[in-house]
Image (cartoon, rainbow, N blue to C red; front, side, top):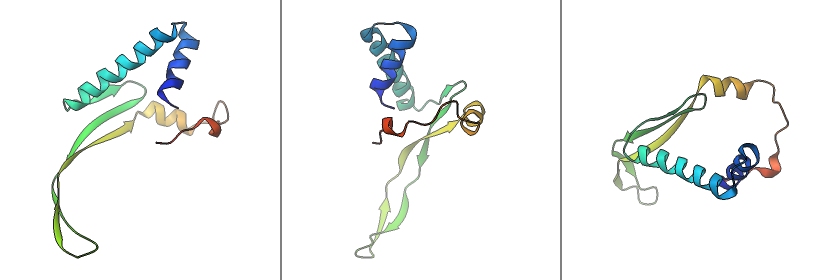
Length: 105
């Protein structure tokens, strides 16, 4: 599912204009991104938690030369689904999965 698909679903279900649906989706994602960039945890009830974890620098090896290098520390975004979402995912599907509409980045 893409952002455009989400906008279309909001347009169809809620009755907003396409521009209003786009504004809602864009604003929602901007709010979530801003909070994550600050290092805050984002909890969406019934969906899950987005959390930033810090990875410490570590030693590694260049596979071509065998030279020891330091791999820089970084921040990693993780998502942990809620129990409700896990339960719904593992129950009988309400409708078959439409694999033609799946997109991968």
